[in-house]
Amino acid sequence: MPLAPPPPQPPAPPYGLELNTTMQTVATIVLWVGTAALLVYAGKMAREERSIFPVALVVAVAVGSIIEPLYDIAYHLHWLDNGEQWTLFTSFGLPQPVWVMPAYVMVFGLPALLLYRALSRGATLRQIFTLGALTAFTTAVFEITAINLDLYVYYGESPWRVLDYPLFIAFMEAAQITGFAVLAAVLKLRATKEVHNLALFAIFPCNFAFDVLGAGFPTLILQNSSPDPNGFALFLSAIASVALTATALWWSAQLLLTLQRRDGITPTGTRTPPETPVREASLV
Image 1 (cartoon, rainbow, N blue to C red):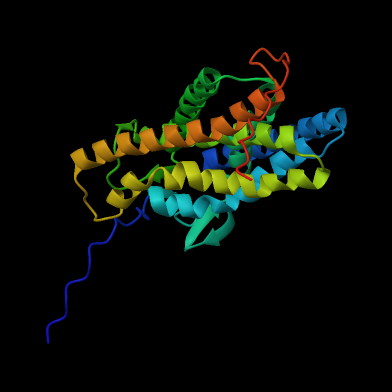
Image 2: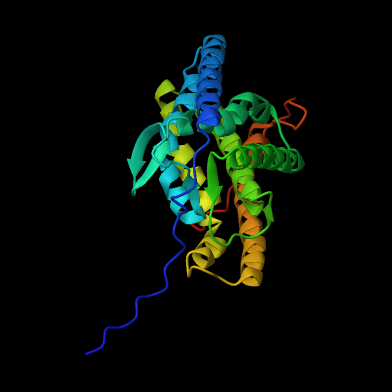
């Protein structure tokens, strides 16, 4: 009896590409030093607020960086190795470089640490999406730089490539970065005990999956359907993914904006009488 042909497989990573070991050293030093400085700054903020919240935020992002292999599989990111990588950990057969954790802290944690206070004092939907546009730009700059310095690659067919970077990913990650800052502000407004701040350890990876993996499913499914998916279909799927991640950010923003209306917080940071909940008439 003839064997059935194997099902289509996604493209294989380009294992033969060489890592730029000089830039590995630079990235490791710069990002870990930056993370240490950010943690010191978070400690200063914690003393001012008399709360562990700022430190918990930075540490939560650092711990949450272990979600990276899920992203790598889905988005076809390959960390260049060729036997030269300084490896932090390996999961799903994917070695993660020693600088992946501080990269998360600087790319995802830094904006949230700088923004959650301002967002909790008052924000508009326009301001939130403006922050999203800004973080899309900074994310694209960071990733294009890292790719072209031979630290990692996105392999296989990917839509909207600019300088070897699938540009739609910048919007996916921007929603995740901005959404985490928004949700951090929500927690800051609602936490009544210090232990509540530990929710950041759940919020970060859950929001990451919500904005990047969940909203990205149209493109991710198509990218992983065969070694050579249709380019035009990928282009359209990227539009759908960006639209979904914008919707996800809008949804997260509603949590903050609703809380602010209920608490009487205006976008300028002033306070008005909070909204009175409308009670439905009892039928009894």
